[in-house]
Image (cartoon, rainbow, N blue to C red; front, side):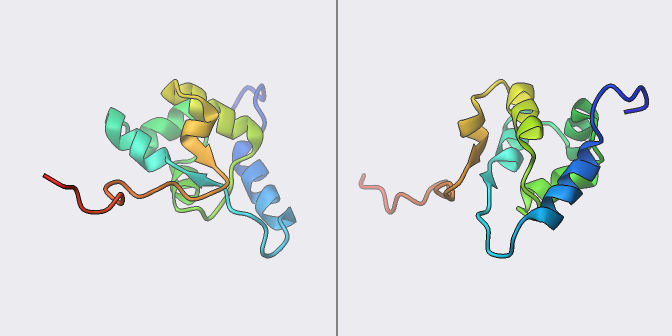
Amino acid sequence: MADGAAPDVEQEVADDARRRPAGSETVHNRIAVLRAERGVSRRELAEALGVHYQTVGYLERGEYSPSLHLALRIAQFFDVPVEVAFSLTPFPRIGSSGPRSH
C-alpha cells in the first residue's frame, strides 16, 4: 500500500515460498469457490486485500500458501471462519459423495 501501513503482502508471499522447504505441506483453499458464490472477481478481491490480482490467482491454484495475516484477511473479507476457506487437507470436490439414490 502506498501509505506503508500494511506489509507488502506480495513480497511476503514470495519470501514465504522461497523459505518453504521442498515437499512441505500445501495449504488448500476455497478462494475460487467463495469468489464465485459471491460474484467477486480476482481484481475486486485483490483490491480489497491490497495485493496484485495475480497473487489471488497464485493462491487459488495453490502455487503459494498465504501468510497467516493474509489468510485471516481473506476469511474476514468473505465473513467466514478461516477453516472454511483454508485447510491442510484437500477439500472434497463438490458432488464427489458418489451417486445419489432417488
